[in-house]
Image 1 (spheres, rainbow, N blue to C red):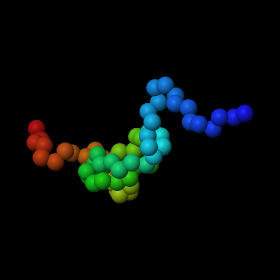
Image 2 (image 1 turned 180 degrees about the vertical axis):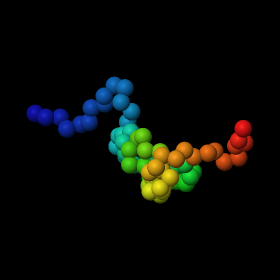
Image 3 (image 1 turned 90 degrees about the vertical axis):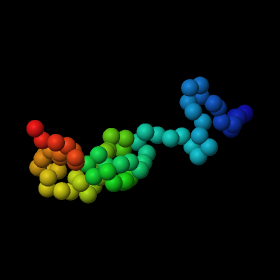
Length: 70
């Protein structure tokens, strides 16, 4: 006979809507333009709009706004 009840796994949090995975899409703030976007994986921090610019593709660094040049 099989028991169909869920079994709690020690150390694994229980979420009412199911488990949360690090690689689930999540709304993040772009590190380049600060706009909100939905990242497709845990390490994605630059939005598609910024990745599509010629500056991004050529590797030109971004200067922080308000910084003073020396």
